[in-house]
Length: 620
Picture (spheres, rainbow, N blue to C red):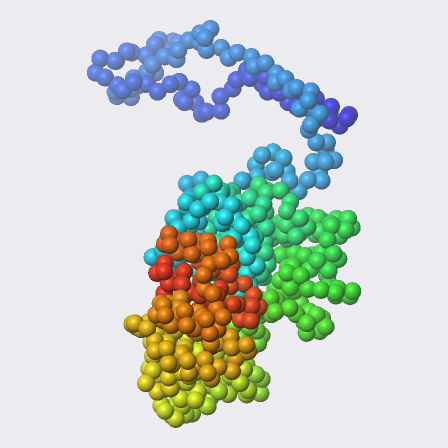
């Protein structure tokens, strides 16, 4: 208290000193600048100067006009300023000298109100009326597609979606919908809507897309939910410093230990390395986070400048990998313990495929997993394996062998040689890795259709369809036999099909269907019925034979049917994603597939409907 009184007394003394100093103002201007500007000279203003003592007149330049200085008046005399009176409650709230010495630059700015609340100037602030990165002109959803939908329904659909889909094309459709430039539903805050979408993208493993979405919102508009989604997105891409603009503004309160550690790391990169290490050490002593998490944060903060000590990351007694540990370990090139690296969950292995600090070989080892679910496209896969070949990857490794075979699949002189190289990439056995089929999509499209290759037509067509090459698949139409799996894929994926398919060919397919529980045949009937490529009589006949019922009995089926009747692409897409959740096609029923394909087809998303239906038969 005595120190606080001392500061208050110093403030009063300073104020009194200012008041006394103003009793005798002194000009700091050079001679000749004390008087106000004179009016422009005229021909009549030629008053002679007063004679100097002794009767001599001072020399005068031609045309010079001399104006006497004005006499001071009572009005020009400065008035004394009363000393500033500081209320006692303000004095009590002032920090002590010891507390002031302990404040960091950032904390002192916050105390004095000097810390910026936004990292974007007011003139450059962006509107939150429509948030997203893909407009309707680039394939996104119409901006007002969800504007009139009730907020509770959209919120429940987004929160209830786990982000894991049986269909690769379903994943792609959902990603495109979530990053579209959309207006918020009726009664929902636009920032909340963006946070819900970003959180779902994170659950899908689409961290790059989620990061782009949160970056479309000014940090001054972020709330706690969007900040949490942003942290997950930046950690998912190992972009640890990406969230610094939000932490440096100080607008958001602490969102947990990860947020506080990120704030310390950002402070280190803002020039306060010593303060950052002190804050992290204080968190370690208080037990605010696990020891390994603090060590990783201290090691990362130390990279901002010359560290006074070395921080050795010790993985003793660490039983699991978390997003924080995985992101910082990869960003620091800190290898995970062998027992943890060998048992990484698929979600973390898919993250490896898109981390830019890893080598092409490390990313290629995880790329098929990411391509299988839709995170990586066929173009991205070809680019990655082409880089492996250009870098001279060892041909004895799995990625190196695949890269060499991919080159052969493009440049081999005969279709048979190209097909042999493609089959080498797929590996032996009947079960073909769907992620590797994505890699060979464009190479498969270069194989010339021939009757002697008809037995391999089905996997080749399935590979083409992973990249949406439906017109290339049509080249095999005159080669494959009716009723075969290759015929079924073409019948579903064809963009030019008119009328209905022959029921006899469907019967042939059902008769030869060797899939588990006849799932492929049921998917074929559901897909053709949803696309309108079976007449109503055939649908009834096959439904009875297969014990299928395509009528909307569930609440979800009724909602997606109503959304399709209202021609609402946005709601249909979100509900379709909700119905495609699962880890494999065994989680999908023919009734659900029919509702999804039919709804997408009715709202003008025929291409997506066709590719999802064909994928169901290919992977059943």
